[in-house]
Length: 343
Image 1 (cartoon, rainbow, N blue to C red):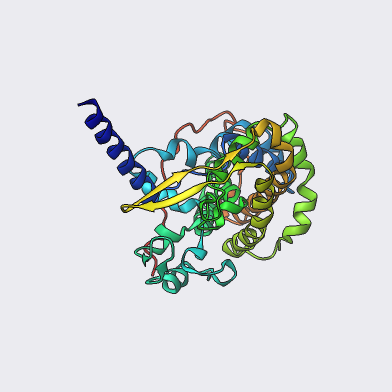
Image 2 (cartoon, rainbow, N blue to C red):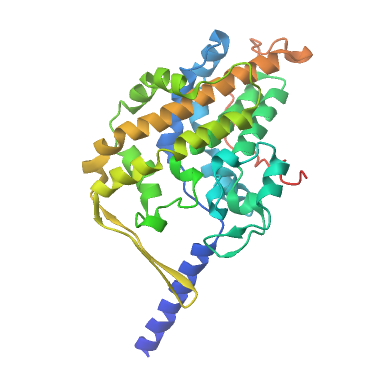
């Protein structure tokens, strides 16, 4: 009787694993510390003195807001809508980031009815399967500009930071987002969470010091208003670091991961790695580079938000002394992607 129960329990577990394997929800992202460091470092990259001074007073708020999509918004049915907005992976259908159109409608048209190379099925929904992080960032940029006071603007600026941070992480730009396609299964969380939380307390200082180098690398055009083009450029830079990331990870693998497909199910055995507290220094240079890129691009976007908002007729008093700088938005309402139905 016990043996039969064990078989039933094992069968249930395997079904559950299979469901997770085919689920479009991807819960990977920079951990809480990673997003917090990126958004705090970005404050130090802001050029406008008035804006920078205000943001310095809102450091805790920004660190909190930059994690909202991974914390508060991960709950309930909205998670299914929000999850694909954290990544973009045209290689799922054999495409390249360089060839992705910057107009959302063109993006959908280009990859609709293509074959999903992992599932070997026709793509049902381009934004759901290939992701839409670039346009999600643009959405929050536009929402920030539309606000009438700096506190409301801050909410969308902070949340926007989450998606900029994700795009700077190489594994958010590939269908091999967790390394299973080349025996690095489990790398995503190991790299951006386990490695990051074990790095020394001066991580913020190191990322902030790297902003100058990142700014030269990104070559951000202050006169170009196209947010999606800039996000695309960031994705390409990030994707090009994948080989280096896998190479570093290979040094610390004890056993490679295994992926088997049996009886209609993906059976996954994660790679075994050396303890992150031992190998963290091997990843440090790459982590700092990726975070500095994100922080630099985000600071640039924040400056652009302020410039665009200041052009509005009702922008007088943007930093009005009556504004309560201690208002803390604990539960910002989930924002539905507004570009999904654009044809």
